[in-house]
Image (cartoon, rainbow, N blue to C red; front, side, top):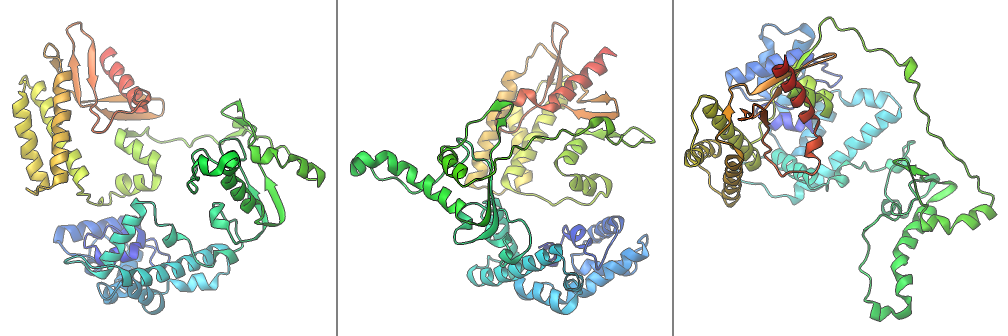
Length: 464
């Protein structure tokens, strides 16, 4: 999919992923250098790969890999549909398949199955979709696939056909297992409320008046059938499991499991208790010594916790980010810029009127949305105005705004810069630190770890 994106997206944001293909092995620093040069010269990808021929600063392995990628991709880019491009890349221009075919491992077989499924999916989808104005067939395919992922409906695109023949553990729902059989079946989490789950789907039950005395029995038929399907998938061994404790509290077995106890005892089934094994922290590997304690921003810490690879791409390799110009992202940036302007005005001793702030929001809004007016943008604009009104109502005129809009929290192993939206000194001398939320309030916002960092950083700044 990254290859398809690189073939049709002129910004080249998929290059870091394609550069890691074994055939190219392009160092990340070279990838960043080429992306920066292409942006500077306004050259689109994949044609911008040709810049590697004379670009100074590239390593020789990186130069070779970039030029090889260009020879493989440029002749077939923007021609035909997604299936044609992937098929020609795999079978004509590149050597991507060679190591997968030479290795008879589970990993290589999984990748081959996934490629087969991608080709089948792309071929069928291309025949059904309609092009938007100015859109290529490859862009159409990627757009539709992204929509499927956003809606959680991409399972058919990512479940390789023929997976039943692969020697690996298969994870699936009971419904997906219908009609299949396996030597060993493991059925976990057989606790009350977990299997069957609370509020789990099923067919609508007939009205009680039609069922009469059998209404209670009919309500449990769906769960019984589902349990029978799960049990009957096993050919040789069946493992039924449940946790005895959940969050240090005793659990209750599912009624479906309890009804099986007599039969399991009669057939001599073994009952095994598994105990949690706690790691021995006394022999844990110590953290490596750093020559210098890191000094990070809060955004860098959050990016690393969410995805270390994303942190590496953004903050170490400094690769360009994918531009997101959705209506919500534009709403977010417009509101953020307006609130920052309000804080700066107050820090300079100017108290902006609410009408001035609305005018500022409108000016930023028109610039971000480029004058485009839709029903969705009008709804978001009203929401932004309501949030600004809330910010005004919570501001105390007797307080003194300060120009400092950030603190540094000094921790045991480094320091973290923590931004804030507003700092006010109240009449009683207390400090009022404000962080604006451009989303709905959650019940657990007061436990947010960022608030703990803000308090620590502020206390260190003012108490020291």
